[in-house]
Image (cartoon, rainbow, N blue to C red; front, top):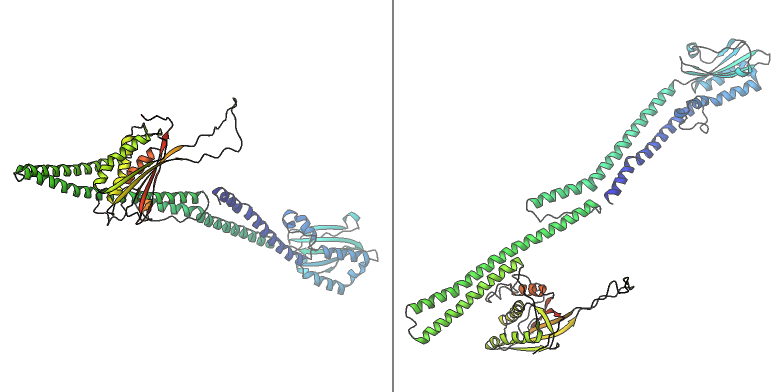
Length: 525
């Protein structure tokens, strides 16, 4: 759930849910109190609603002992003389006393029967009528002193004597019941608000604050240089996405640091190797030079041999210095290119001739096949492309393990797949295509294959990485810095092509790279 959804949910938790729960609790509490009052004062629950005591107290007091009042009224109309029967009155009054009420009978302005004399004496005023008045024959009074309701019924006995039946109902326990209900309602509201607030705080903490705290701790860990502590956040909101992005950043930072450490280790190893390799030719140059100076080479043949050795060792030093220079350029990813259009056939023929003599001296043959048009041109940096060929062929020569080595160079033309045409043709105002179909790029694919020991399948994806040397323990005697194929990839990439390799162990390796054709064709001389 997103934070927006959580805020909306929090709004419902803090408003709608408490209101609904409070309404249900208040209804339940009032319903309970109403049941008690209905049983106490003989109120018909069908006519007495839960909120009458709050919203309509007049209706509440009207319904107090209403059934008893209606029974007394019916008796006054049908058999009024029963109110002169004290045995009947005692029985009826006994039933009324259980509900906090009692009856008073007045005949000719004289008290004939009093159901509860103790409470009667505390009444503040008794409505005694001297004559029958039809509009005032059914009245209700409230005695504030004793918290009583007095319901009066005026009637005539059969002897035409004026009678009054007073139903006195004590409602003094109604306020206490009301205050008890109010306390229960307040307590219920407090518990509801406290519970919903607690649940909301726990939910907010679990879904928002805890991930933020986790993110803060992870930031502190990264600040101290510890990149090994992962961030475990399962939420799908914006904070969860932020934590996942932060985790991806941590992984990338860790990878970069590890690469940096590995690169520094490779640099130290390479410098150590080159420093060690420099000592050997320099020591030889120094020794042979001292031999010439000391007269050890006392014949022209010895002097010639010493000088040739010094020259060869100087070439080794030059190679190592070139490696250091290349390393500096690789680190900066900066090669200076001078692109020119050259004839493919002429260029590769010259390159093959340059290396063929050196390969023959090492008992390695080279074959060259070109199936492209003789007028095909390529736009390349001739020196850098020559470095590509030299690095790949030198790599094959370096690891050749057969007495009769063989290298073949094959060149053919290839094309990229054309883009899918649009579903509907879109035209400009002049009628031309808004998105004209581009011609597929034409490439030249160069394959350099050898019959060497091959490369293991798990090494193939890494051979173009800087400083990577397959089976370093086996190749430790081979001169090199591990930058040759990395330079090849960089140069070919800068030429707009790609490079890859395929190999079968014990059979040989094939290196492939592509070059873009120059659309401007030139004819050979």
